[in-house]
Amino acid sequence: MIRNTKRETLIAYILIAPFVAIYALIFVYPTIDMFRMSFTDSPLIVMPNGQPPEFVGLENYTRLASDRRFDTAFWNTAYFVLLTVIPGTIVALGIALGISRLSGRLQALVLALFFLPYILPVSVVYRVWDWTLNFQFGIAMHVFDMIGIDRVPVFKVTGWFMPAVALVTIWWTAGFSILLFLAGIRAIPQEIYEAASLDNATRWTTFRRVTWPLLWPVTALVLTIQLILQLKIFDQVYLFSTGGRPNDNLVLVYYVFQRAFQNDHGGRAAAIAVVLFLIVIVVSVLNFQLMRLAEKKQ
Amino acid sequence: MNADTAKRFNAAGAAITVFTVFCAVVWAFPIYWGIVSSLKPEDEVVRPYIELWPENLTFQHYWFALTETQIGRWYINSIATAVGTTILTIVTSLFAGYAISQLRFPGRQPLYWLILASFMVPTQTLIINHFVLIADMGLLNTWAGIILPQLISPVVIIVYKQFFDQVPKDFREAAVMDNATEFGVLFKIYIPMNWGVTTALSIVTFIWSWNAFLWPFLAVTKTEMMTITVGITQVTDAFGVYYARQLASAVLAGFPVALAYLLFQRRVTQAITLSAGIKG
Image (tube, rainbow over all chains, first blue to last red; front, side, top):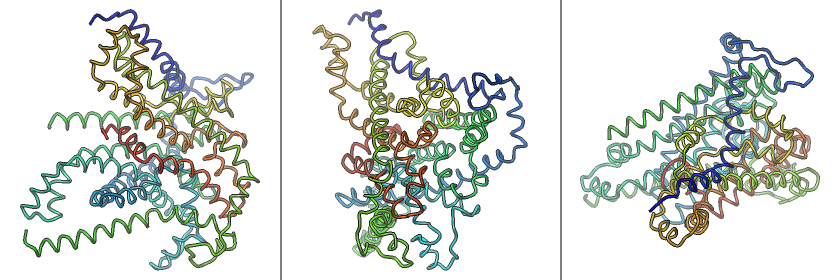
């Protein structure tokens, strides 16, 4: 077939024009602008009659080294990743294995029950858990009483805050990982299990020798998606911090928000944003390379 | 396998099944508890013992939220911005996905890299410069201002590209023989053949946009321009420290997306697995 190249190019440009225009405006330009701003002492919004921001070189970056709030934000983010990524993946895998044994309507119902939280807005999740874990009237406090721990206002006490938010986050986002695991489990050929049962393999052996290795690619995918997602945490931490101790609970995005929107330090906030930007990019690229390596090995 | 081990296996299997169902009920319980609490009078809500069903069922908190607060206005804002985001995302991604999949043109490869790059870039880090940009454009506190930064959605393009790649070339060639234009091919073959994907992607884009918090929270300072997800957490004085009222407002905020999920369960799960790069 003869292709009319000129015409094809023209049509292609018409088709991609809206997309390119939008990406140039809200993706490429803001990214460049963020880097530029991070080398200045700009406030969030430069007033037309105010002083134009000055170039300050690497100052915004060097001062992060001795910035206590940055320290808190960085380590809290790391702590949060530790509390959510692997535990959340294990929980989701367990649930997916349980669901995969069910069938028909029961399976659909059980999956819906586990999946429903994922579909809800964060503010609904916040309201529901703020109520469930309410210090005075929360139903979870009855569980505390039963186990015999003293009631705690979990979102107001620093030591409890991150684990509690991590728990809520796992509850909220597990549905997504469960779906991926279920797709992975369905892709395992049934014959392998039949062969395993002919060999009198126990449940545990079957899991360790068959399910786990065959699910590894999906597990790796879930772990990466979770890792990148949790590095960018903000919403839950912000919401549960209201009326609590935000400065103890800072995470990186929260600190960007605080610097930019509460302290009006645009330049310094941009520097923090760049740091997070680079962390996420490095993690993504590393992961991409690892996946490629793994594929080559196979 | 002898009969004895088979029996043991089944007993253990049944135990696992029961345990799974039990966990599912516990898992969803906080949602149930939130809904039930929103149907109790305030004095019942704060009773020191557990009541799984209201003694005096009441809709007064819903009535209050709908008539005494700006929730109706927030609903309109949420619907307008979520629908706007969905239509713009789907249309621009569908066109771009088609061009990348089916057409050869200079700049195709850089375009593809741009899309892959936007996968990796955390949009949360762009909030400062999004805010400056939208403020410069005079779009703070407007629907357009809420919508614009939400249009970075590379997943949708990639999914479209994959599906368009799979349409057999014969269809295209036959149409071209019949003198169909490029747009004709797109609108008469490629789009109709992929309605399923379009529906699935539209539903999840709508849900994601409805649920968006960080950007709508920053882009709006006037209470009457808030989306419902932001409004119910920011305007607490509208509800006071009335737990049942707060929960009723939360139920109202979550209801549309929960309903969308329950109605289109298969489409939603399909789109979400696709978005992670797994063929569902």
